[in-house]
Length: 192
Image 1: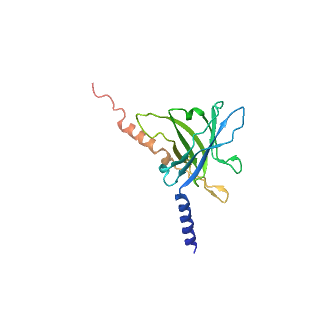
Image 2: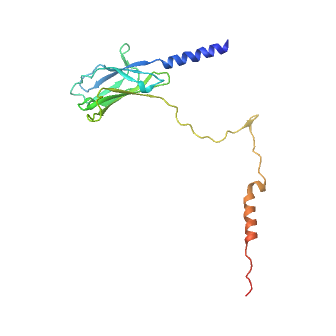
Image 3: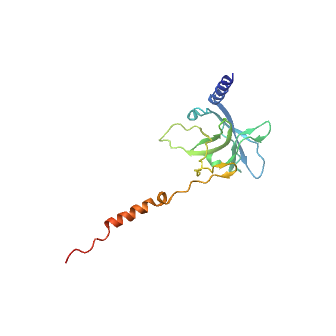
């Protein structure tokens, strides 16, 4: 009975991970004169099992006031009127003529968006004909783990002492050097 519940839990987790997910990315013009409400920028689709197949479902170029030079990018919840992911600040020049927007999204192991960013990539018309917006989805990875010494072994609350090595176990190599020197050492002068 227990084995079947474990198997069903694992299958459910795999099914959740394999399902394509979507997120709506918003932008907000940062201006010192007036408060702007966040506007939808793009809706993206991604699958944790195949991140290379991530795509932009819809994209609306933002209408930015000319007084603002910076925008905030992230996932915004209209109901609570708050940002639900980490936000980044980008220049409005990322939307200039000759640049194609690339949306970068970081997701956690459950598939929830942790943060979003925007980068304008310069278009080279001779190289490609795909000028549309792109999405790059990155997942969290486990950080590098430190290499630790062997653990201290305790028995009944006391540290176990390591066995002391004998003189021969510690200095066997010095005895070998001394024997080599003695055997190859100074032969006397040969007759004159």
